[in-house]
Image (cartoon, rainbow, N blue to C red; front, side, top):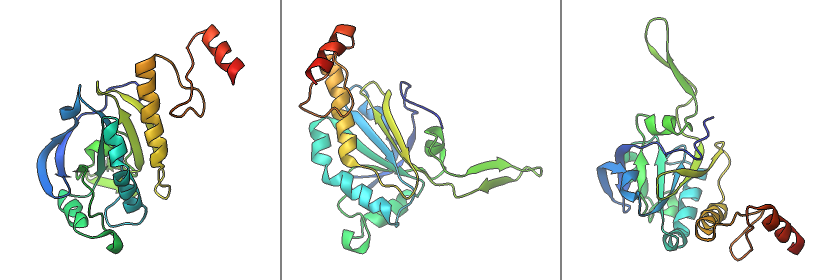
Length: 210
């Protein structure tokens, strides 16, 4: 598993559904550079079970991400047509109608592979035929990318394990606290709690108060 933290997020241009209805062919994260933070999250498949719960959960907190200057972007290896079709189904029928953040179509698997969240593997056999082992879909990878396009946090879950949206928001707030205050965030830090100076005196002072 590659650790992308501290590195530039792999760039891509791909088809996506934006605003819950419009298909575009040239979606890229480059549009957010210097302007917005990005939470880029991968999910395995459209029309499944855990995946819509995550997509809806992120959408329900979209206003909170907006206030923090964060763009949500989802990715799976399904086609843009599949994404669009799923968006036409209501939540009651297993759909994701109402989702308004971009959903990227990683149809050729390159985005998932470059972020190292692609399950399964592929290779060429002795007859130069392309072969695959396992299903080539994305794990539940999530990447917090700063305004400079650098990955600052990542987490990857196996297929059955849904993510915690509150924890994603906490990490965004921790990053912004560090950027604004110049202080680091100790274990279990949350909004409203004290940070600590990254010096011996600062650590000693924090520990003496806690």
